[in-house]
Image 1: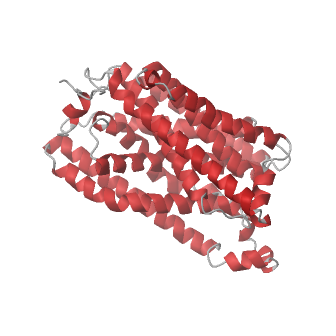
Image 2: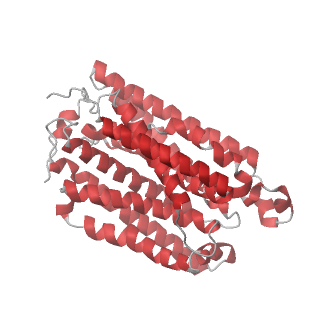
Length: 390
């Protein structure tokens, strides 16, 4: 089968650069107009990008560990999306510079007057925060390099040796993926309200991250397949597992979110309940109800029928929906710490998300122009193309 490399259309690059440019301009203006608001918007954008990049790297590891064949023709999509990870240490710089405006626990006078913050200070202190970030980035970048090196080497050498190496790498990374993602959620988002804690918060972010990474991979894969970039052997049945996995992780996200709420409600501890009460005041109450409908009810009903899971058009639509839903979820988590009186969305928030999408598209096209879109000599490729529903 012919897998000759085809460059993506120039209009893809144009769209990426346009969104990147407009998003950057709006973000700079936002920082000039209202620095604190811009920092919260930027944090929201950053955590969305962590979900896309690190979640896609987690998908690669899951494929190797599970020995999946159906996803082999599409693995490069996740590799390209994960390639935004090396940018994360650069993108985090504005957050580090503006930490005092974001995080109450960074103020020594606040810690000195607060027994809870004093108790948490061995973990919540700036030096240890920097050390943890360095560990996260080193782990993510190191495993990205190793996974991609073995995958691309297989295009040249063929054989199963590169696959075996990546399987061995996937076992430790699966554990590190869960740990680093969980603690990154604690550090960047949960510590916005340092008195609050939830042992399920990291699992909730993990569920949303995996759902988001499957959604973006679904959209990119189907779009590439419809335009002939993945060869001629792709059929609609090849997309079934994307729909099934989005359905599964949407239910998992809802289960974790409900469990977290139920435990907080049942325990009725002031240090926990205030976080939920913040999201039940004013227009945030409507946003909270909307989150349940937008992030669970509608995707559940759409993805429930088997026919949806083999319909490229419907899968593309619901994948875009779920990407917006994850952004909505992150906004609901982060922004009440700034917009305390009610839900608000304006040009500053729009600029932050345009910047994120522009970076993702630009990096994806750059990587796609230099690497085969399909792992052409992977021994599992033909099995993946010949995937059939029972």
